[in-house]
Image 1 (cartoon, helix red, strand yellow):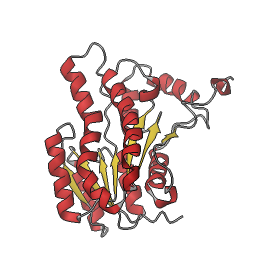
Image 2: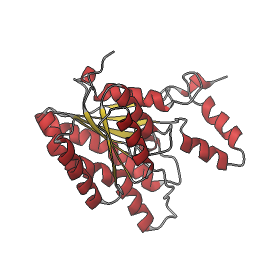
Image 3: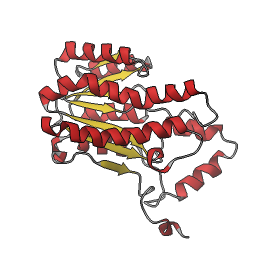
Length: 263
């Protein structure tokens, strides 16, 4: 299926993670569809990713940005606007489950909000004038933690709950401009960061097996590629009458009846 994304300028935050991370996979999938990914992230890996795309003839750039700093975000969007003159899609993908729980300092909690929630607002605010011109759309990457809680991560949970609230709020705000706003909700996805976390646990393999058993569909984790594929469909014109929606890509982990898991 042609998603009609060729030459679309798609800004993706938090997209310079380790190879195989969700953001990096989204960027790679965009490039395969002929889109022009713009990587906004603080990690220097972004320079290499952008160079790889440029060597393939894709006019991509990396804009190094601390997404917890709204001033840096404003400068990043100005740089993108100066180069391309337009933005077709914004994918707010940055997210760090930083463990800022009730025992954390107020400063740590506020930093978590800045990175995981305020960055979404700031990126959207500064990209919006460009998106209005193209009647593009916005996609927020959410997490099950915003719906279910997790324990020990108040900052991340509050942020991801806020992301879902903003998704609906912006969908209402921007209908008059013909701009769609949706969210992808992720539960258990096998990323390099997840793999690294499992390896830190004394009983990592047992923990992993217990998690996988709780995923109803095929008893396996969602792949980053499956998430990327859902993102691309959501931002494409093939999803042209979908707005204000929470699209859950999780093998039924959140919503399906637990009785499905009875052995």
